[in-house]
Length: 329
Length: 109
Image 1: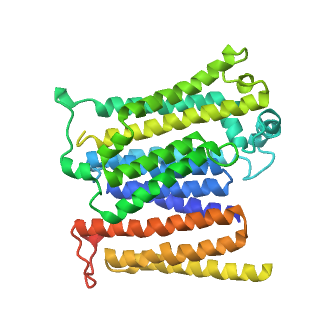
Image 2: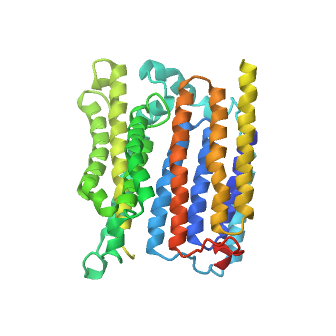
Image 3: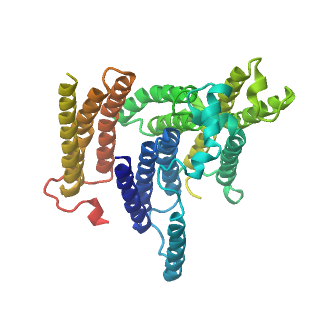
């Protein structure tokens, strides 16, 4: 049954991908990308990767669609004419596809218990998580503690991306002062004149925030964690910006606070790692944070997940505001 | 008892699936934007309610049922709002709600 659903979803995925490549209308392409992300999230979910599915649905289908639309508002709606060297690119893509297809014949069968991925460190993680960390969600244990270095790297990648986009988009053009929106009165009011979306949007914002906090603090017990929670909290503020206007959102959570969230989040993660050294163990070893090694691990994971959530919220909202504040590139 | 619940749940799921299918066909076959939205709204209301009710019967009186109820409430609040926003945006963009109009926006552009 899983294989049947998987093949069905993957077929839809291929159809969507072809449609994205073929369409000339970039707005349609962005909408199709959202569908693509949702399909792949469903695919992750039937493969029991609920954490990844939640991230993909929140970031891929939700936030990046909004960011793409923000970028699209600064450029044109239609793709320019394709480059003339089409045959060359077709040949390159086809040969790469053939090589990858050939390589898949060496892969172990789907769900094979003897596959290398199930023989390497995964059994150790599954076996030792109850002993060392004692939380039900092994994914969070691997992400936060066993592979803490990788997650630290991810947080700093997100942080660097945020800094990079801010540098690119908040620079004033050619010595002039910061460009003003073309129709400030429309940007200022947002959808405030449209009663139904405004009422429903305001009704939903607190619940989305609450759900974001649930995902943040329930990450040890179920699917969730800092990345997903950060995306959800950012989504709540973006919804608020859509119904109430850019200005009110910046009043509620000013850009300075967002930058601070980015920096404090990334630094909190690093500081928890350094605390391991200071207390006499290794970088990112949380066992020494508390008298009991197991509760020390749990405390460390809660702290670094909080750092991840803050950094992701700050970066996503900063990028959104940076797009929204410009009227052209 | 369990068997009866199973049958009711499958009837609900099948009916929900049928409504989603009808909505999908309608969204493809209807002549213009407003009639398409009208057809597609069936999937958000009847389709979602029936499928969710069927899944809730499968889940029984557990935490999952309450989560499903919360999701259903969320869908019932957001989908009509999204439909309203879409129709209102189409009106602002100047698409006239004319039932006899054969061409729609996609064919124009």
